[in-house]
Amino acid sequence: MNQIRLKALAKINLGLDVLRRKEDGYHEVKMIMQTINLHDQIHIRKIEEEEIRIRTNLYYLPNNENNLAYKAAKILKDEFDLPGGVSINLKKVIPVAAGMAGGSSDAAAVLFGMNKLYGLKLSMQDLMDRGVKLGADVPYCIMRGTALAEGIGEKLTKLPAMPKCHILIAKPPINVSTKFVYENLHANDLKPEDHPPVDMQLEALRHGDLEKLVANMGNVLERVTVPAYPVIDEIKQMMVDCGALGSMMSGSGPTVFGIFKSYTKAKEAYEKIEQSGLSKQIYLTTPYNQREEMK
Ligand code: ATP
Image: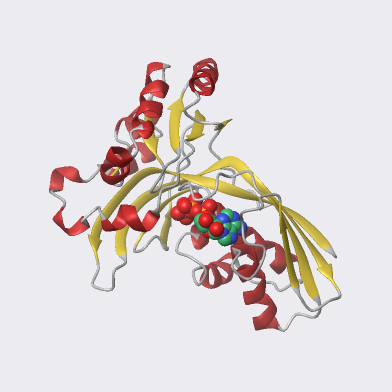
């Protein structure tokens, strides 16, 4: 086996709560993660030269050791003393710095792909143990599907699959700093009523109840991001006006998603947002749930 092609899938947060800021500055979170069928394409090829080459279709992404795909390849190359090198081609589709774990998912796919390419026989847990060194979201991107993430996001519990629906994604053309959002949340001063009802969502998932799941969606980080960037609320409102069961910001933003039962309504919302000019990166997709392997 000399090469492998992989899909690195994006995620959204159906619920995102921050429980507290710890003494070390990290935040303890409680999030419901959902993989969606929106993906980067990754091609890994063995080369004779002792190097890790990265090529991407986005000029502003690092193509050196700062790329998460590079870091993932390096971890396995060093640990197993792999001969030669790899050339990694990344076709980015997942919006960058958008709260959709794009970089983490690329890293997860590279770990998974190198494991196969070199026949390392590492288990999913082995890969997750290495992935967490690259970022708190990487183990989840290896696990995929519907999951509860606790701790700093690395403690994972598999959940029943999200019921079938259509998911509309729209990323407004603004840059949001994750650091800015967490620092301005003042997590330890939040009142009980500020926390979204994540436990109700867990119950909804157990009953396969899409309406209840969506009715209880909440992202505590919207408290910081939405006042700073009102376009997020405008897009949310547009999705709801077009018939979304609910709409929310993913991660620390600025990506907004809407959950629809009807494909027709989701398509209408897509067109409305496109015409409004509020977002140029719009995708209509579905939840990814199959327990199939990364292909
Ligand atoms: P999260 O949802 O985990 O917060 P994110 O969507 O906010 O992730 P990413 O798209 O993963 O953020 O990228 C954040 C930064 O990481 C980018 O500004 C980019 O410079 C850097 N980066 C390094 N490698 C990659 C990669 N393979 N894809 C995207 N960004 C990368």
